[in-house]
Length: 145
Ligand code: ATP
Image (cartoon, rainbow, N blue to C red; front, side):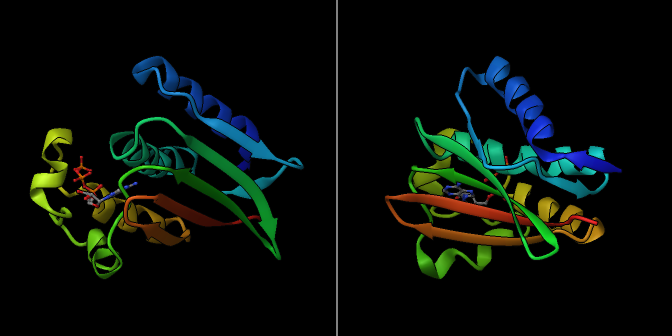
């Protein structure tokens, strides 16, 4: 379906705020539309928002925009970050960075492998960037027409 990404994100953020009392800032200059599967996109975004929540304390922001004929949604946190040499591995099944470090947040290490499968199914490209101790940025590129 055709999705108004700002409305869509605002709705997801509201659900998230009610459940976890964590604020999510949404930034966008224009109305941006994507063509996607609403349910799958919701699941996909939830995995990344949930990680941003689990591995950071305060700041979570979402930037929505357009590049060429793709729309993007960028989720930023200022949390514990991921060491460079681990960045490739976090999409593997059951992989968790430093068990001791992330033990208190629980989790199975499955989230991102599921995210990868969903993303492939709906033709979403994922870019993940992170600096240990600084935070993580995930950008999802979506078909927009
Ligand atoms: P689950 O998603 O099953 O609850 P999980 O969060 O451990 O568990 P993934 O979502 O697959 O599993 O993430 C894998 C690992 O990548 C995490 O254990 C964590 O170490 C790291 N990670 C993922 N997102 C972030 C983030 N935003 N900041 C810091 N580390 C992250």
